[in-house]
Length: 125
Image 1: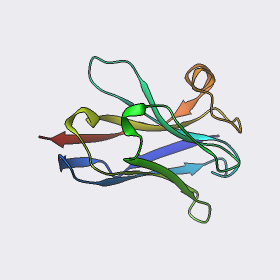
Image 2: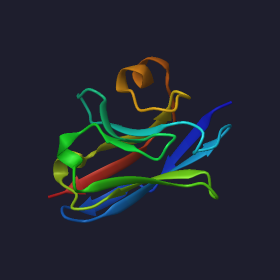
Image 3: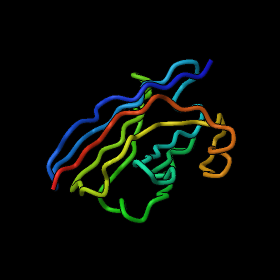
Image 4: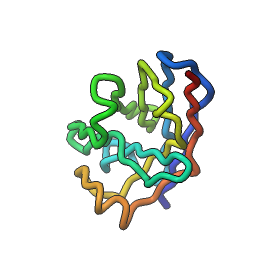
């Protein structure tokens, strides 16, 4: 059974950094693509970054280009989201997800994916 658990969120000032962790069980993080997405109150779910099975990364949100990066540690079976130069508009609950595919396809993920409870990121101005 695929399970994902996010951690690392918190309150940070604008311009600060955070690293989110996504601990996976039931699969290897190099076996499937893993996506980070976020959802702010009253807003639609928004894809952030995805790492494919072949280590390619896909940026879904133009607003995070140059500020966020995604990586994985196979030994720890964990995927990370490194966030820098944070802005108040980055405030949201961040989730990691997989649809057990090897590529990054947002529509497929939202239809068939599994994700964890999420971790809250709050950026103060």
